[in-house]
Length: 149
Image 1 (cartoon, one colour):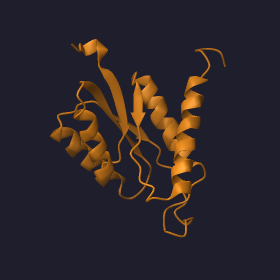
Image 2 (cartoon, rainbow, N blue to C red):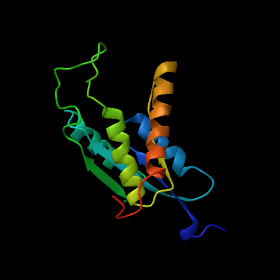
Image 3 (cartoon, rainbow, N blue to C red):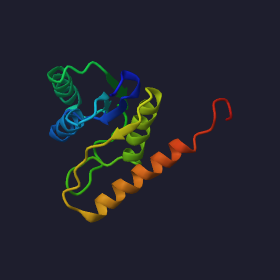
Image 4 (cartoon, helix red, strand yellow):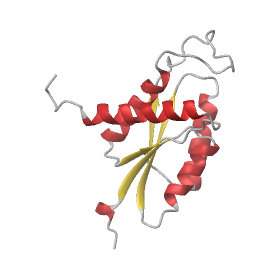
């Protein structure tokens, strides 16, 4: 029997989009009960307020009350710099995003952080995302004890 104290605490880096909705449903439909926290990063993009609204609607649908909002409004500060496909380019954007989400997940005592992303079948993009996740996890594990700076 699961008790409240023994529930795994899972955090999802949540954009408010369909992938995040799918991840939320998948976590909540696991056989064992979990505590779930949705983490949203406002990255300064024009669609940010709309994505946050979608996240809140999804949280309401699943009666989730644990939301964490992080402000990184300068993540994509210079909209003039774009990748050839139109995506905004920002130095170290993904590691900054993941570091902020991992810090929030660690602060709230989450056991896992889920990051639902799409790489459209691109092997190089998949490898890069996995490497970045592993590096952020290693940084978290190597964090200095409090006060040892």
